[in-house]
Image (cartoon, rainbow, N blue to C red; front, side, top):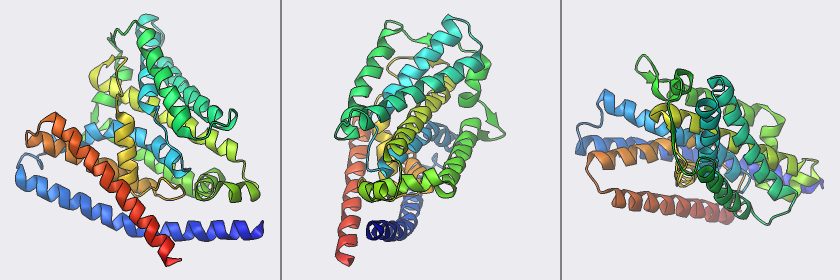
Length: 330
């Protein structure tokens, strides 16, 4: 047992070193991307456009927190976009249709998202489904179906000012949503690096069996991870509603794709146990800057989707290369 735990600690230390080296690479990639787009489009570095990039990146950044935790445990959450949709539709029913206080409605929105996330965790741990790909894929369709059914696919608009605050207000030149992202990422950094649960999340991703042998409650860790993922999806939904002042059942389509791309670009590995939350925000910015640059260059939306797909494949391939290099070094 002691040998397994020692091997786990050694593996996590080695992966942390690889992550540190990768951090410099993605920062350099972001800088180079910004320089290229700035040369091709003078509008890129304008204050209004940079504020637009920041505002557009916030929803993906918030969702990516949950996506990062799932991938950190060698899992995946494909349901975040649907959780977002169902959570905001329920908030719309509470706040607009039923006239419940907007603050209570936002709280209930977060509760709905968290409960669906917990449901994902329980499917994985109690029903012993073989992989979170299956459980979260099922939840993706269930949540999307309910999002469409609760209002017969009709959008809900006319939210009060408190709901709009996170998505549409600014403090000086800085969007409130960007400040929220900064606070969220700082809290998650402290959670992962300063708490026992944070260390357990890394350990479970590094080696599930060694984690069990060392006394870690793996089922509890996974339930916490997917509950947080559901919570951040709902929080992202509140920001989205605040920006457009409407909740619609098709909100969040393919958001999980951008979140996964951002996490992988940020250096997290599908094999688990690797990654830094700070790098994830850089991955989010790479995706946001790329989309914004393609828009400024008037690239057709279909080809923008192609470009994001290519970036995802390249990011995963780089992860494969890192793993091969790590094995060779041993």
